[in-house]
Length: 81
Image (cartoon, rainbow, N blue to C red; front, side, top):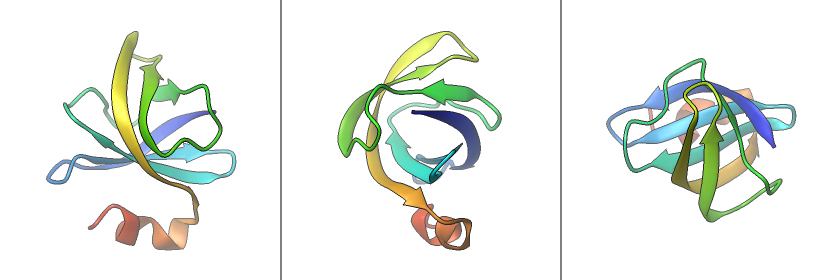
């Protein structure tokens, strides 16, 4: 799966990635992502710990996926904004 970082809640560390099937939400443990970064991961819908490649910054990061296929109308709720 791949997509573009669409929004970040820096207080909670939550990141929303815009993918072809909706938004995927994960928690980052450090500030390895910025809005506009292109990212990818190997499994379609992982939950929990997963390696994500930040292609824009040539980094591999461990993140914690919380949700997938989130519609845009529920993005603020999932990002806890």
